[in-house]
Amino acid sequence: MVQALLDDLTALNNIELMLMLDERVTETVQTGDINSLVIQSEHNTVEEFMRAAELCDAIWPVAPESDGILQTLCQHVESLGKVLLTSPASAVAMTGNKYKTYEQLLRHKIATVSTQWLEQSNYAPGGWIVKPVDGVGCTGSYLIAGEDEFAALSEQIQDKSRYIIQPHIQGEKTSLSCLCKQGKAWLLCVNLQRFNIINKQYELAECVVNYQPDTGRYQDLTAKIAAAFPDLWGYVGIDLIETADQILVLEINPRLTTSYAGIDAACAVNVAETVLQLLQGEPEFKPLRNQAITINLKDAHEV
Image 1: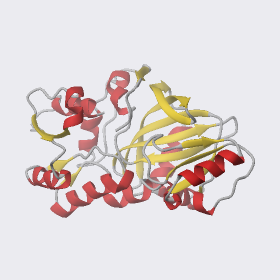
Image 2 (image 1 turned 180 degrees about the horizontal axis):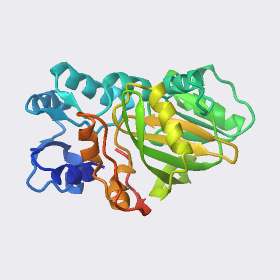
Image 3 (image 1 turned 120 degrees about the horizontal axis):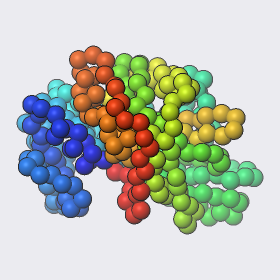
Image 4 (image 1 turned 60 degrees about the vertical axis):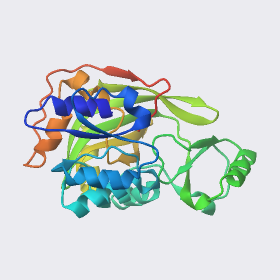
């Protein structure tokens, strides 16, 4: 994702980039002549981020929602009065919390997956998935298929107040890549996610970007979600589960997602450019290509 973002930004004129990068991923990102700040393990990441942000006009954080990381970075950017090129901290606080997202979707009558707090739940027959309320991707999620597994996992998790439980619904896992601003949404593409189940955990194996054309129902759904979460701004990823009867919204990601890395190849669109257009008005999204691009993750995981 970081490499794709850098490629998009370096293709634009009149932009000087500064990249803050964790030392553990320096070998996976080709920085070229970009001014790079490598963060070592002994550095205070937030302090280094603040110092770098002071030198910039606009900041695009690429970070997980877990443990409030992304929300904290967004708050710091806002406190400096700099331009934030992602959703504000208020939107991250809402969508980064799966239970708050579930409640908001219910309030706006948007079909979603039934969600309960783990500590308030008892086992009921059927398959279930337990996950952190602020987890990213499949990290920390576990499938359970029996009362013994439920009891064992409940015993294993020390702080159950941070976990939710949802029914394990069989269906096609899709996602939407879109832009949002002030309650409006522009759908970029529809993607297919394929997972492996290893040791009772989902692992994203590959993502097919732009795997099918929009039939109108996806644009309608993104419009409803943008209206329900009007603070969303910039690139947003929406995870869905599609059954024979309905489309269920599973998660809303107020940040770059894996699919972002394939949009330029699939649609010939510089998404970073369209995000910058949001600063002045509405984006001009004119895909010059229409093909499906498969991203194989292998041992890689979503940032």
